[in-house]
Length: 149
Image (cartoon, rainbow, N blue to C red):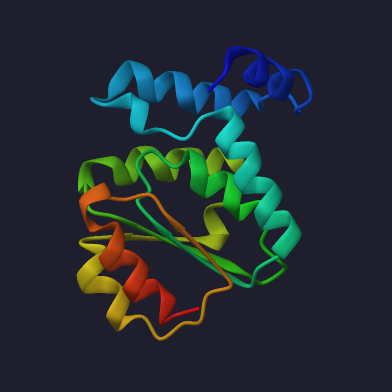
């Protein structure tokens, strides 16, 4: 991204939530490939979309350490749920600890496994889908998720 454009966006965006800042930092300290984490600008964008749509149900493919899930969950309507699928079971407890700290653990359902196997078994209609899993599988994720929207 152009540096001037990025600076403009940062100057005109809400500051990063201290909890998310800590999550981002801890992700970089503790995990391999921390660049897979959603950052401040993308997180604010996801939160804005979720707040605008005010979805009942969200599907997220690829939880990683939970940054994007927290951002998306903040826009859920009352009684809504976010279903987040992560193939790496070693990330579940870490992500859940931040869901608790963010106060969104009661609206997030964490599912561990391969999204390609899980999505067809879900009998839920989604108002919003965020695909951020294995990049090689995006076409298949899209095909499966489209049928659930």
